Length: 67
Image 1 (cartoon, rainbow, N blue to C red):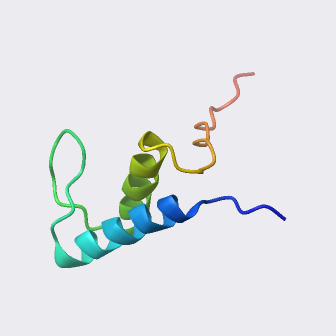
Image 2 (cartoon, rainbow, N blue to C red; image 1 turned 45 degrees about the vertical axis):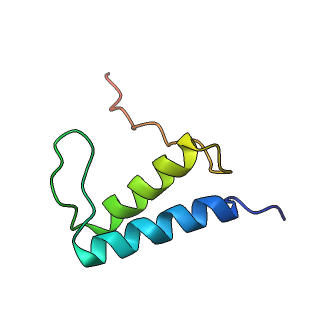
């Protein structure tokens, strides 16, 4: 079975997690300090996508169905 994520993606996420642990990881436009583990992973994956790494597409936000 093929792997979902490439090595480049793995290294980007690893770097983001280390930065979060040191307290130097900042979020996008606002520049606030990232403390959430999930947010650090998301930042790492988005950077990997931008650099052309093998990463699955982002999930669409589930919209509530109207009756």
